Image (cartoon, rainbow, N blue to C red; front, side, top):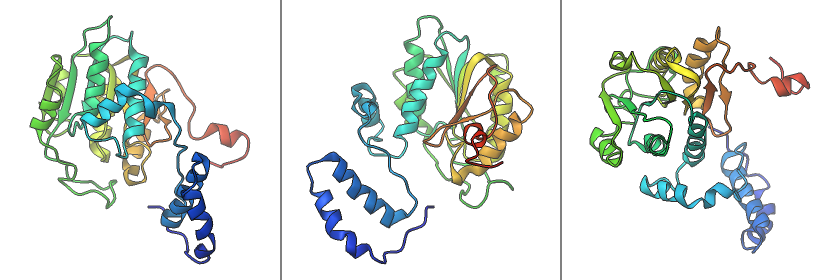
Amino acid sequence: MPSRTSTKGAHKDFPRFVRNALSSQDGRKLEALKAFGRWLFGDYRLTWPQLAWWQDEAFTAFLHRFDELDGFNTHRKWVLAQLVRLTVDVPGDTAECSVYQGASSWLICAANRGNRWHERVHHLFDSFEGLSEPGAFDGSHWRKGNLRADEEVAVKNLAAFERVAFYKGWIPERFPDVSEKTFSFVHLDIDLYQPTRDSVAFFYDRLSPGGVLVCDDYGFITCTDVTKAIDDFLRDKPEKMIALAAGAGFFIKGMPSDTGRPCCRRIGLCSG
């Protein structure tokens, strides 16, 4: 959690904060918001608000459907919808591990329905009992049963799509049910080390060339166990995770990538 900065001297900036907050100019309003954010969280960084995708009507309707318009997941949901587009001509079904209420799967199913080249089935894996027992790598942030959602809610939210299959159970218990299938797109959002490691290990060999695997929580400081799980598995693989600004990460099967932070390392801005 970002640390809150000292309030010493903050009163001196208050008149400027008020003037900026009451201004009709977006830039000055943003300065007021940034100042407030620094006071609350210290090193928290705001995103410039004038992004075109915020005005996308279809995506906004999706956010309203799942009551996520003002949620913290909107950036990752938008990126997920864009990454599915990379697999339009890649053979194979799609899958999600850890479904919650089905919002991410809704985006994947919508893309599947619009695909003219492949009739894909979307496979959903979840215990619908929340998280399993955290293990040795999982730290203290999560508890067993966190993030629980009812299966009936997910089923109802995806009822408009015909080609879906639910597999209720703890990961990886139900994976043998799809062991003979290939996949074009896989989404993981599991929060814990071992089930994440089990998932990427299972789907890696079944991911078609050009297929995409996305991990929603790859870059979260509350889920460093997930980062470790995927990096450990990919250590001897040509593909490496591409870390995204909003916290997710992905790789494309058969597309090698460099490790770490090569761009800044090459010009001497970071070490390691």
